[in-house]
Image 1 (cartoon, rainbow, N blue to C red):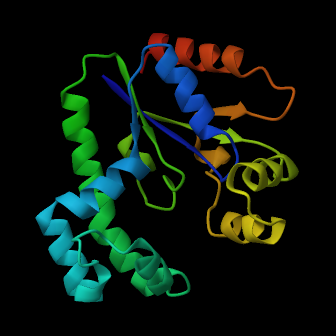
Image 2 (cartoon, rainbow, N blue to C red):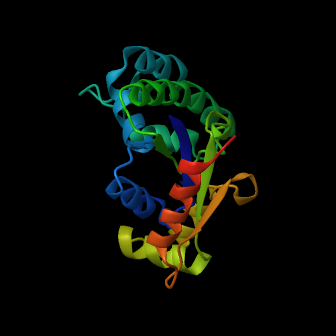
Length: 194
């Protein structure tokens, strides 16, 4: 099984691409959803987050107080690095367990911060989804109902992938033919000889 990273900046449409890939019958691991589950269910991860950030990081319900954690790490690179050092390895372990339960020739790992998290080398190939900045901003404004400035601020906190280090680029602007691009990439991945 080949493991393929799928990334792209906010509003690039990587989730749309992931949906097309799933429609084609390939499994796609949603790292954001997995991380949200892991921080609430895995006792070793919960313990490490409490040790790093204090008991108040979890609400009385036992669920991670995500806004509180976000406020701690937002402008503190050292705190963000501590949180990532706890969460990213747990997500990576979960992904490998998830892959072991699949029988597909290709499995995909969707993550907006694949390069920032230092995970790119764990994959046989990386696909980066790109779109023009204005297209991305408009999509997120419409999707999330947030003002332009907020979208731009959020975009600054993500690199948006690293096309130069990606094996494949999918362009997702208004007139781009997505299905054809995905079919082209899948064909190359299925027939790729090392």
